[in-house]
Length: 97
Picture 1: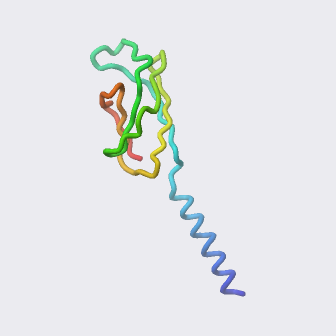
Picture 2: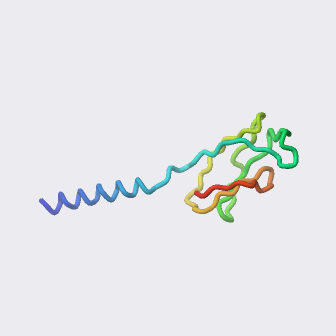
């Protein structure tokens, strides 16, 4: 009986550690964008795509009329650096996932 109770405790503890180490997936990224060549210009409607390392995640959103964006990135089990693109042009910021 004591061995079973100990085994249940170990399983519960291990499950807690696994859930604490797992990041919340998917993640939202949001902010504002500007064109370096024309900072006051509008980028409304431009498509936002992303990749993790060399794997494309495709188009994940678009820029709003006030140059803001909110995109949902689902890494589909991949890990690595997320790189964002606006109409195929690499954005200057990226994030570690």
